[in-house]
Image (tube, rainbow, N blue to C red; front, top):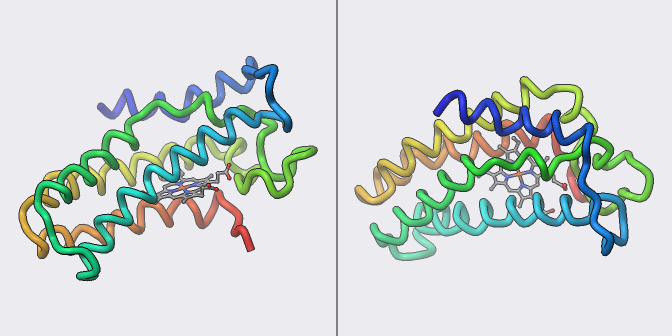
Length: 160
Ligand code: HEC
């Protein structure tokens, strides 16, 4: 598993030399940027369900909690390097207001990979615990949230 996870962001470096372009793109790398933002929205949807249960805004349901946690885990293991081609950061020509990915991502691959792995590790525990009751779910929320924040703080700009 470790080796596989290492590959996730390593492939981003590879795709940097051969970025795929799509004829229908209106802005550079539109397809890749939309894909990665959708990927993040999948995270948000599933963590939102867990968060709502943890806060008591949604009744705890073991099956739904477990499904959401496993979706997060599966998403975190999805190879997504091709969605991050070099030149698709927020400072690139034409991409202001389109992407919030900081250029530092492309100069810090080892660190981005570490952040990615930290999230997967937190999600392994969450996926194992989410179906075991509200207490178990709650005790894993912080680590998962930190897994998201741990990458957003250095590598994603705020939209406001
Ligand atoms: C390894 C780094 C990394 C991790 C881990 C990570 N994100 Fe992100 N996230 C980003 C980057 C970079 C962007 C900006 C992407 C862009 O605008 O092109 C982003 C953007 C987002 C967005 C905005 C998407 C949009 O439509 O503009 C949401 C929502 C989001 N992340 C949720 C999450 C959640 C929830 C988690 C944890 C379960 C998470 N992210 C984990 C790097 C990460």
